Image (cartoon, rainbow, N blue to C red; front, side, top):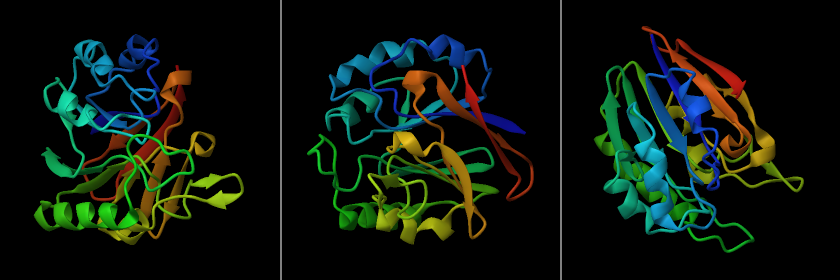
Length: 213
């Protein structure tokens, strides 16, 4: 069993970090919007406080320079990349598909598709195959203003994974299952919301708890 803490949408509010760490995770996933429009180097003190392996993607509210900052931090930046953590294979895609707000890190769905296609070609599948994506899949945990605003490309590649960790839509905290794939939005870490993911020994043995600290 491995217990992984999923955080997202900190938006520069790092006051709950110690409370999150008291949950004693084996590792941490961060699904974007670590800052609130920057500055990129504001994440350095955050990762200095975390003492377990941490894997992150940026969100649409993070400046693009955050990619370089993450690469040189104690965190593993997974945007457009993949890594194996024991029996867990992790793929990452950050930013988001276009929004009406002209936020710093937006990608076309074609760019998201190209990223995922490239990374999946190199992915070494294991017992648990996980996507950390800031944007949710289209039609799943993606309602904003009465419309679905998720990424069609993330939805297109859904079947490649057992678990999709997403964020972006603050009001859509939850866990759903679609065609055997669990999708989780842990809520806003800025408000103390998070999720603990329990990975078992067997394929599809993934349990998700939504928590508040």
